[in-house]
Length: 130
Image (cartoon, rainbow, N blue to C red; front, side):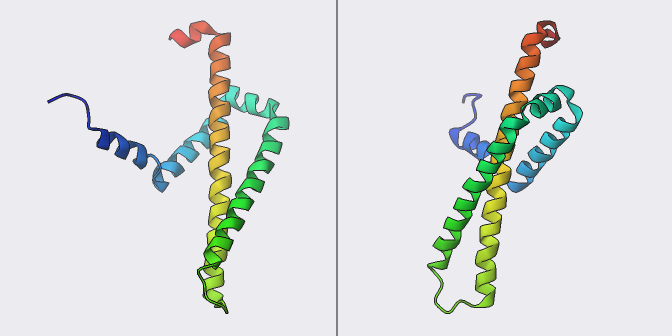
């Protein structure tokens, strides 16, 4: 037998990364990294002219996704719509919007953090070796 893990266990490892508890833990670590790492915080604050419009675009994209999911879900409901059903569909749209904005901002800040760390390591190569 080989020491390699099966392809199925590798796929499960990737999928477990997307569990809500793992995502929330990653988001918390990202926020703490922004608070603790001066280079990351400075890098982001210097690029606020880039971050704010991108965040607004993310909100618009998530709004479109939320509207699409509400319209899609409402097609399966018979008319007239009860109050509970309308509330559930509205909650679905809110969850899609919040999830979309958070996930896109998480990816943006992860990318900015990597760029800030790369910029620091190229500016100070001795620090990278230790």
